[in-house]
Length: 193
Image (cartoon, rainbow, N blue to C red; front, side):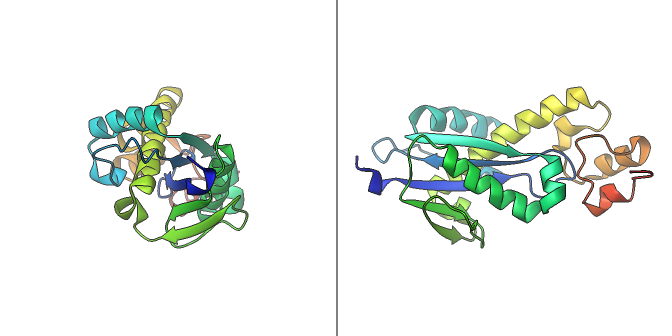
């Protein structure tokens, strides 16, 4: 297959949480090996996402997953951190795509190829749905690891999202190193930073 046919899908997981990195994936699917059931990761059960992630990694022509950490999120803001992650994920692919289809309504300024933003693209374009799955599965695994490193917050359960249980843990324990200090619900618990 010629490289000008390669189209990458790009999506992120973790823009809304109060803790942990934002994780961005880029995928170039093999049109000769379609993967049944690829959809927006939010519509799939965790078990289905895990199974599809294994298939995507095995059958895609190329894929990458990158993290943008809490310090960078706080320095840039979550939107810009997500856009930076998108460019990094595309650059990390072993193949250079002709076009990047990106979930959302904004494009990074420094894309390594042409780009097209698609609102709800993870539900509309299988290649973006595949990226959505890889990003979500990778971030969920990372949040389970962070739960072991920072016990008491419940990261394995809520994945850093601002649930009532997470807010109660913040009230009880204060922020840990993985909390986004630029986010108002975390900032209100900072005493002397």
